[in-house]
Image (tube, rainbow, N blue to C red; front, top):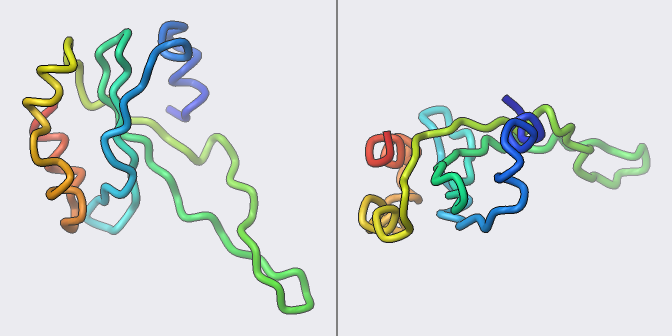
Length: 111
């Protein structure tokens, strides 16, 4: 599902505090993810963020093109009821995140 579908599916998600658990997680192919926890639902989700395509304006300037909302997809990894449990399960995440394919580390601890 895309990010808007994710938020639309449960109104608690939009109003909730979210805890960011890193923005540089990667999959086996080098795709980039941001991992967040939604306090009101307990959901831990990974948001896949494709690399923005670059374009040229014809005179040599390069700039990122607009990324449509549909391109930002969400995978709910699981539910963790409390912040204390979340912190315990993901202890050491800052060291794990830079490793290649690191999103598997999060999936193993949340799923």
